[in-house]
Structure formats: C-alpha cells, structure tokens
Image (cartoon, rainbow, N blue to C red):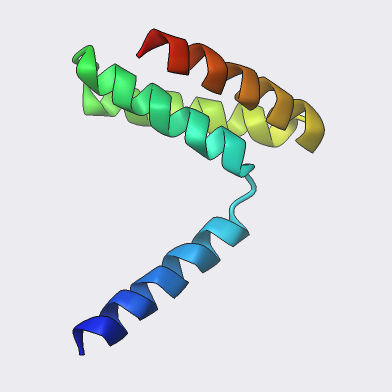
Length: 81
C-alpha cells in the first residue's frame, strides 16, 4: 500500500511539473531564491507575492530567453550559498 501511494504521488507531481508553463531551470531558480529568502527571514506572504511576480515575468518571456535568464540566476545563487 505504501509503495502504491508513493508511486501515485510521484506520477501526480511529475504530471503537474509537466503542465507547468515555467521551465525547469526557472523552477529551480525560484526554489533557490525561496530558500535564500527564508534564511534571511522574509515573511511567507512576501515570498508568495514575489513568486507570483516571478512567474508572471517568466510567462511573458520567450522560452529560450527565460531559460537563459534562469540559468544565469542559478549560477549566481550557487555562488551566494
């Protein structure tokens, strides 16, 4: 039963990720920014607001441009660790 539950959760998460308009590079970038924000003590409401703005900006960009931007952000955030 436990294996079935884990498998179904994995499939659900994979399908939700596949339906997302945000490239995986941008999702990774946001996850790093969110983690960094939490370390700095940014309130949850502010993080949610910033995430919405981030997603809206990414959705307005060309896919290749968004991936390039997010890859650059990922590199910078890696150095900031």
